Image (cartoon, rainbow, N blue to C red; front, top):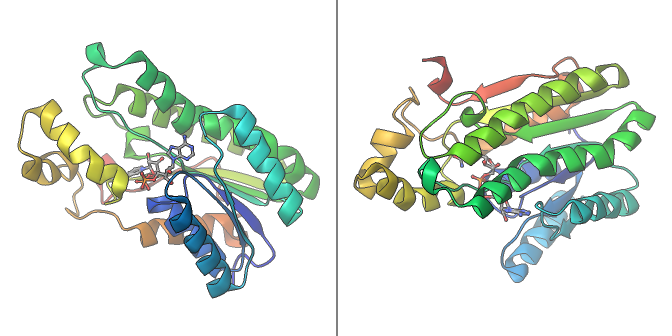
Length: 261
Ligand code: NAD
């Protein structure tokens, strides 16, 4: 087990990629704090199942990643219950697809707050403890859109590029303290976030929903398959483990070749 006696916060882990990462961390022996929205009964059954299956502590915080005060409270909860926070995965994210001139101001603000500023606030809250213990792992989940652009996603692309920049800066700044910070840039992964986009993309591009996957989403993804949550989770485990000690300030693609065209 690669993460025994470690404790982790994974934001946006009630669904999709975050849940896959939280599960893989628990399987590797880490205590995990789950975060995100959803049906509270379902979240509780996920929490208790993970706890039972892997024999680790699993907590839940419904903190809104758009709210710095709630992010700080979540970090305090994890520190109080686990005794420390060794690993943070900044994964929570939302999407909004619209032409730039029609992009609603409040959507711009919330995409930037949830997809980018939340990572800053959580990093700020956990770094003092990591510095003291001289060990820490920060894993950001950005996107291929952290490195390249697509039309109609101005806020998302801006936030994800920002995440790559934040990851580089924090990685360099904390390298001598035994803390790494890396940013994963996945291509399209079939999660609820992507399922929801199919109709919006069809409207924005003026094409049929059934053509969106082939002609828009996987058009540059040379492998022509969605990335799997389990593949991303295995990468996050590696980055969080001792084996990842020299890997820092990196933007790591897992996108079936998309950004290498
Ligand atoms: P998802 O919609 O399945 O999960 C998003 C998670 O974030 C959920 O747990 C949700 O409750 C949570 N969340 C949303 N708003 C929140 C808020 N204000 N506060 C707290 N939690 C909040 O999406 P996903 O596809 O698993 O995406 C996870 C991350 O991966 C996102 O940052 C996304 O941008 C990124 N990503 C996804 C893909 C993809 O194709 N699915 C590709 C590249 C990057």
